[in-house]
Image (cartoon, rainbow, N blue to C red; front, side):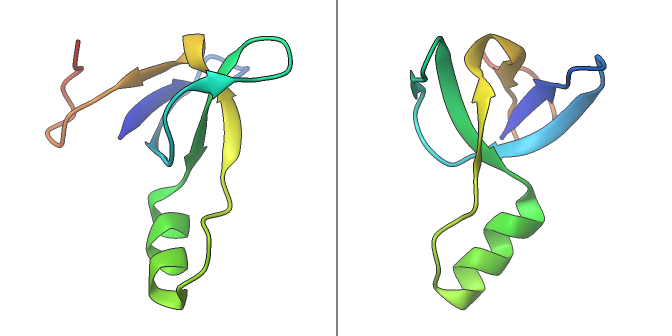
Length: 68
């Protein structure tokens, strides 16, 4: 799980669906909502993820605490 900062500064909880990778201009991590992850898993289909700037996400543990 990650906490992502949106363009408006809002913090949202998302699920990382891969390791950080090089985007076109900067590093990204692919993320999706927990609902999307569960639906994809049930349907046996790939997750529909979005690339998110790596510098705008922070890993969090199950209790909501940040990981280092």
